[in-house]
Amino acid sequence: MVVTVTDPIFLLPIQTSPLPSNYRFNVQYGSRQIRKESVWIHLASGFGPGRMWPLVDQDVIEPCGFSKLLRGILNHVDLDYLWGQTLQLRANYVQSNGHFVPSTASSPQSLQLPVKPVQVGGGPVDMTEIAAALAALPCVPRSPPQGHRLFWTQLPNASLTHNAWFVGPDNRLAAAADTLAFDRYSFWVSVRGLPIKASMNIQTGEAFAKLIKADRPPPGFAAPQPTVAQIVAAAGSNNSIFYSCIFWNATRLLFYSTSPGFYEYGPNGLSFLSLTQFASGQNQGSPWNVRLYPHAAMAVGQSSVV
Image 1 (cartoon, rainbow, N blue to C red):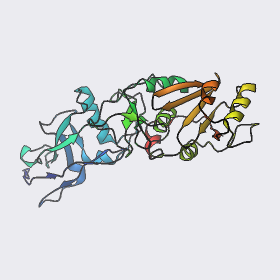
Image 2 (image 1 turned 60 degrees about the horizontal axis):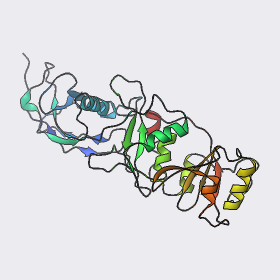
Image 3 (image 1 turned 90 degrees about the vertical axis):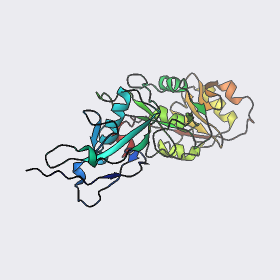
Image 4 (image 1 turned 90 degrees about the horizontal axis):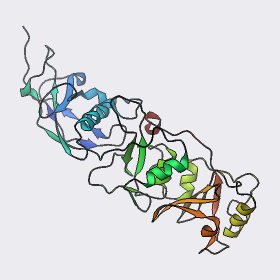
């Protein structure tokens, strides 16, 4: 005869945590010792396929870059279009006969869901194209390090239909109450697909240059801190000399383009500046830092968070 145990389980208030888990679920068992592998998280409204997830899955990191538990919850959220809402969840455990008993379920706890992610292209490769796509998103410019970054998940995956997820300065998925924003560093972190785990709290051009391994001047240009006049003169005689270079000072960050000119994400969003526009309004003797950066593959999915 199978004995049914009716000791209740307790789901503690759900805590937020950085990716790849994003939420942390903890339970208490009362008088009975219950194996963690027997505990499931499920919708407060009931059980059913796609509505319950093993607790141990929060420690399994999948190639997409989320824990298996988080990915399962986000799949349900996407199917029912619950982005930004509050989800009520319970914990329960499996009886010795393999079934669940409603009386052993925990009281519900609230889970505040993240904002809706976006789908950008089929796999961005060209920097100017992806920069234009991100500049069109409903994000406001903000001072560093307050901006959001985009976490690029690994696709294709039948249960994840979006490849770009807004992540805050604390490496957590953006909440519904957040005002989505890029800062002058987080925008380019997102464009370049830099690792989310390594790219938090970037506040200086030096830190950004180190992150993208931009550590040497361009070939044939020895000055690491050229003046505005030197930059314009060099680019005017050879408009490819600064190809794959970044420029920065205390308040600005620019990517050079062979148009020739510069792309900059600033208070007015993304803009392109010709050499003439760059030089105007500045003291011609003002110094800038210039470094050549390598073209690295985007960090997507698991490579971005581990």
